[in-house]
Amino acid sequence: MPDTPIALEAYEHLAEAYAAHIDTKPHNAYCERPATLSLLPDVRGLRVLDAGCGSGVYAEWLLDRGGEVVALDASPKMVDFTTRRTGGRASVRLHDLAQPLDFLDSATFDLVLSPLVMEYVRDWRATFAEFHRVLRPGAMLVVSVTHPFGDYNYYRSRKYYEIEPVVASWGGFTPVRVRMPSYRRSMAETLNPFFDAGFCIDQVLEPRPTEEFRKADPKSYKSLMQLPAFVCIRATKPA
Image 1 (tube, rainbow, N blue to C red):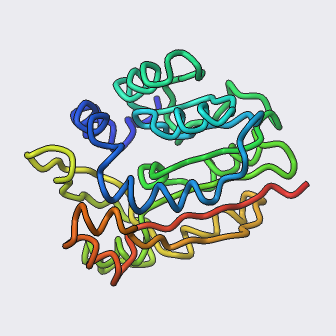
Image 2: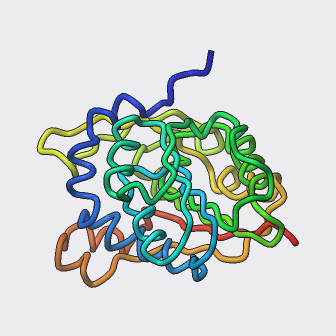
Image 3: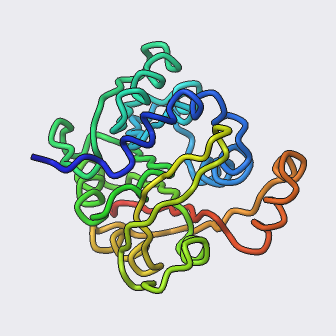
């Protein structure tokens, strides 16, 4: 029987507050998201897999620009929020990305977008192999994750080279801090799974906070100008 996703309990607890604040929470709205969106092609007419859709902010963006969206998340509450936010325009399904995408046919997607979700999957190679399988030749994979160096500093790890289970204390969504488990990994373990799956990486961004971020949260803005919190990676499946 598959293991329970590492962050499922935390996200089920956090879902309502997450959905209420994700559009304007500075780290997401004014740092990670602009950088991730800058890596996307014109999505009009493209079939897109939103792999780790959360409450639907990316799915809605893709749909509003003419994409055909299949959205997946391991949290039942997040699936419900995405379904409501997209108004039935997307095909939304409960799914743990650590498990095979055996309900999706090979070479049927033009883009896979996986924003801030791979931190909760230990074996990237298996997941990226599935992303590679469902993408058409010449299609694109865009992934954003927490930055290996930022994570190493935040968790004060002494096991840099290991894929290490860690727990963060999240205070950005609710007044009471939430314990959020994930996996911390090295830079090599962030990049090599793309190559091992057969992808070619063509752009890497270490996003800096925007001016909107500075106005909303000056203290965190200063911190993020000194050490990145995210890395955004675009790769292609060779034609």
